[in-house]
Structure formats: C-alpha cells, structure tokens
Length: 255
Image 1 (tube, rainbow, N blue to C red):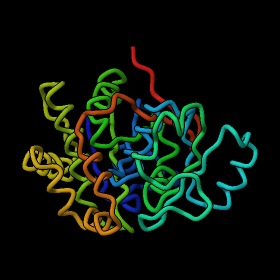
Image 2 (image 1 turned 45 degrees about the horizontal axis):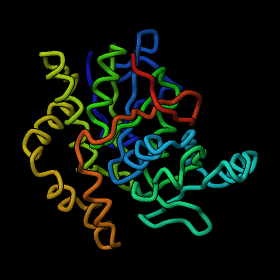
Image 3 (image 1 turned 90 degrees about the horizontal axis):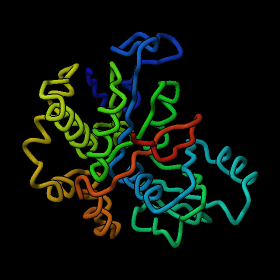
Image 4 (image 1 turned 30 degrees about the horizontal axis):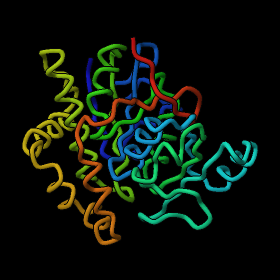
C-alpha cells in the first residue's frame, strides 16, 4: 500500500485525461480519501454516526436545490456553508455539533461547503472513495487494512485553494496509523513523509495546532470554539463515510 498526499484538489491529476498519472492505476484496487478537518468531513462522520440516512454532496447550489426537492421534505435536510457561515434558508450549517441524533437520524443530508464538497467531486471516479477527519482516523485505518488498496490518494480540501495545516496533519495521522498497523513505511511521496512528520511533532497538542492554523483562527473569530475542540478529538468516531454512488456517502461496512 502506497500513500500519496495532495495538499489541494487542484493538485490532483485529472482522471478524465490520464487515469495512470500520479501513482494511481484504476486497473488496480485504488482508494481516495478526502479530508476537510474544519469542518466538512468531521461533520459528515458525525452525522452518519448520529443516524443520518446518507450525505449527498454538491459543489453547485442550484443542483443541490434541484436534486433535494425530489426527496420527501420530512426526510431531507439542507446543510450549507460558505466562508465558515451557514447559508440562508438551510437547516444546518457545517458544524458537527448540529448533527445530533434528534436532528439528523433517518434524514438524507444534502450538503455543500466552501472546500470539502469540491474536493469530493474532484476524485469521484476513484473506485473506493471515502472521507476522513481526525475524529475517525482509527476507523479509516481499519477500513484500509480491510480493503488493502494498492494505491491511496489522500486529498486535502485546503482553504480557498491553498495549503491547509489541519488537513495535512490529518493525512499524516492516517499514514502514521497505517505504518504502525503494517509495521512498515507506506509513504509514496515526499508530501506523505512531511505530513507524517507534522503529525508526530504535534500529536499531543492538536487543539493548539488547530487554533494556530489560519482556518482555525478564522473559525475562532466566528465563535466556533466548541467545533474546534470537537474536531481534534482523535479516534473518537467509529464511522467511515464511503461513496456508494456518485456524490452519495453512507457508512462503510466492516467485516
């Protein structure tokens, strides 16, 4: 198993042009993991653990409205965020604290965020596509050990097209977890080595790192301190959101 880390979706090779570029061979078992620690992929895992029927993601809001209207009103929730703030008229923003069983159980969540949903669309063609956060890191590692994909792309959502400290440290957490489980290094590029080093340096101080990161400072200014604490609770959620059809995520099954 080899891990390749991409710091933004724009760095991911265009699969429609060359499926074998960047270490990924679609003829082999392959996996892409999208990370948006603050906060989309943390929210997705929390919502599914709280009993949501599925998460359906959209980059385009008009498409979200069109598709969601075909779903029974009592069985749907709209979750939307831009620049850290909830979209007008939506049921939810992009906060894991909103995803209680009372709020989301049995509902399909139609979701669009600033960074995370765009990253998911970029790798929609990869055979195994899942999302990860610090909270469900151990569950993601367990899933990868179960499936044994030859190549793993870890795609950081980043922040407005730029490098994101919190997403990179999460990539490093996954790579470190896999290396421990396999008792061997699985780094496929220098980016994954750097991500592992970052995690090893800050593993015991994740709340401090998140608040030091640019995006974390922005969320703190918006009053999202509870979310910042929650998003750093390593290995606290035992659900892996897995794409079961284009744009639709449900809990992965373990055996």
